[in-house]
Image (cartoon, rainbow, N blue to C red; front, side, top):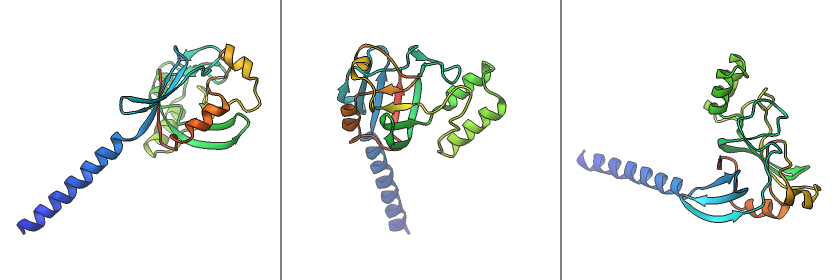
Length: 184
């Protein structure tokens, strides 16, 4: 009996240990909307820094409605990948987050029903509704056929984070569904 307990303990310890090690090895993204950089990170170590990104035409902050051209700040996960986007490739966020939804509900921007739909989707680890009053379809994308010169001189998106097509290709080696993204 003692040996069985010891074996169970060792097994559970190994599972917890390897889960913690695996979680610490996960890559995540840090988008700095002031420096206009995207960093690929592993724990606190920066693996790559991508410069000259573009964000929403009106900067970053709290999105109040669809089409406000603001890049939402917060912590998100990649909810889906579209390799055939008009912007080359698109890595969609699970925006709006629960925090975004809570703030929007308190501000009177979301109905209780819309708030509940967002929270429920997150609890089920699903992509929340993308047609909310505070927007949707937010993520990281390339330029597609957009003008590279415009990209270099101004923030031009409707709220997404834009990279060059080459940067999006480079990012593809690290990013997958579930990758954490912090936009600050």
